Each structure stands twice: as C-alpha cells, then as structure tokens.
Image 1 (cartoon, protein in one colour):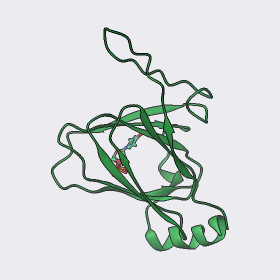
Image 2 (cartoon, protein in one colour):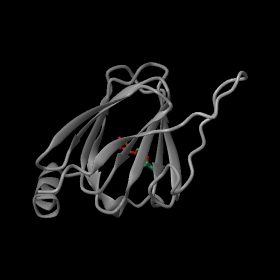
Image 3 (tube, helix red, strand yellow):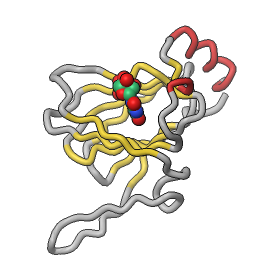
Image 4 (tube, protein in one colour):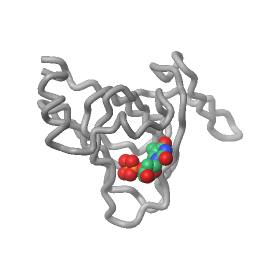
Length: 138
Ligand code: TYD
C-alpha cells in the first residue's frame, strides 16, 4: 500500500529588519515544473470547496495570508492539514480527493500547479474517484 502522496513543506523566509520575503522556485522549493499559479480569496463564510481529485496535476498550496484547512483522502488514508503560515506549503500528488474549508475571512490561498488548466484532468465524481483510487493508490 502506497502512503498518501501529500506532505507539508517548510519554506525559509529571507526576512530582515524591513520584513519577510519568501521565494518559491521550481526544484529548490517546488518539486515540479511550475506552469500555473492561481489564488482563492474572498470566500463566503462557512464555504467548503474543492471536492475533486486530479489524474496528473501536482500542486503546492500556501496560505499567503490567513488560514484554511485541507481534508485529503487517497481512497485508503485520510489526512487533515491546517495551513496557517506563509512559510508552510502543502504538496498534493495525484488521485487525492481534497476538500478545503475553515477559510479565515482574510485568507488568500495561493496554489502553484504543475500544469495549465485542463478540465479533463479533474475527477469530480466521488464514485469515479474511489474506483480510480482503488487501482492507483492500493
Ligand atoms: P473550481 O474547480 O470550482 O474551484 P475549487 O476546486 O476551488 O472549488 O474552479 C472554479 C472555476 O474556475 C471553474 O469554472 C474552473 C475555473 N478555473 C479556471 O478556469 N482555471 C483555473 O486555474 C482554476 C483552478 C479554475
């Protein structure tokens, strides 16, 4: 059985007396070639989003401001991650169902992705996810 292919990353801050700076580069901090970045912000109170997995896409999520939580599931193993610091990233591999919730009002969630947007890479149907996860993750 493969372990759940998601883990947190710790980013060093290049801070000095003026403030903080974090730089994220392909390979040094991000374990794939970066092809897209998107932001999720101004979420309505109590909202829960995600509800999908990806076939090929790999992502790193960072709360650059505020906090939110991720529930991850690979069909066997579950993990909850609290993203609450700009120095903390969450790497998510393939065929992992994710739900994102508990967004703080000021949350800006930045997601760094290995591929440009492709709707055919999404698995949005839970039964289809479980079917693929059984083959891919066990
Ligand atoms: P959606 O997948 O519903 O977001 P979440 O998984 O966080 O709930 O995305 C919302 C809309 O934005 C949907 O119509 C797809 C579109 N979208 C893009 O066009 N490009 C992107 O990079 C992303 C992530 C979404």
